[in-house]
Image (cartoon, rainbow, N blue to C red; front, side):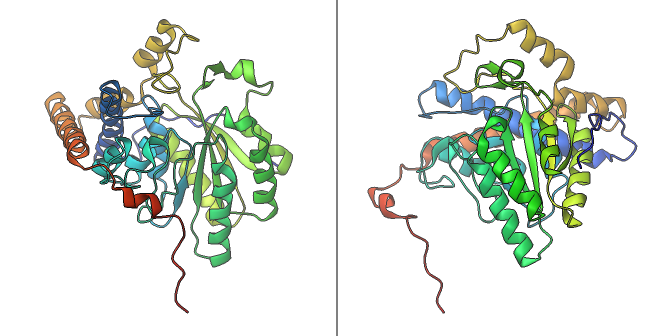
Length: 338
């Protein structure tokens, strides 16, 4: 039976090395700068369709990737660029896909919401709310069947947490003791609807109790807390105990998508989170307080990250549009011989 636990919180560096703190800083900063550039390209008309930015939520995926091992899988919704970068996908390929170019991960056919990487075990952003949750359980089922010790991180938001297929998946995952970590990225707003207006039970992770699924709430603006909770969840799943739920409390600074003016919340609210709770600034302070790096060294990292992002944008601009022949590729899988 699931039991209530306090949110995992930590600002301690006792078990965190200089190298790890700098790694977290680099990875979160890469996501932040990449998304800022994507927003610019969208405004210039170089990215079409929907574009959902991850700005503010960087600690969630960076912390959980720190708890993952090679071969573990991940699947998420349409707010997916940060997940791709955190699991090691090339920023050039991600940006080229955003702009619908042949050099993109889905060869320009998927755009912002639909790209994949078999090499990095990234099974996609998915545009239908909550649809990735049963697919994530399916990935975990395959791993259990193969007995390979892998786990699957299945990400979805607070809005998707109200979808019926989520609870059908909870039941099946617990029944079959699947090695899947359900990650609820609770960024406080389902599109334009605050959690308190959309759900009567605000502690979303506790809904797993009906199925006997263990879980906890985590401070998603603290990458160290997310990593610690992720390691606990991963160990639980690898031990064959079944699924685990992590409700990671985070916050997005931009609207639901680039077309959302976000008038359902005040500028003061967003600014307060930026000033008091920003995940990147938190790690930056830990680095400076622990004398792991100087201000100038951190500025140099920022400069390097901006160069990587600018190179990705240039690659996307130079990459050609997909040919007409691409309309007929990737429709059917090639049958294996024998």
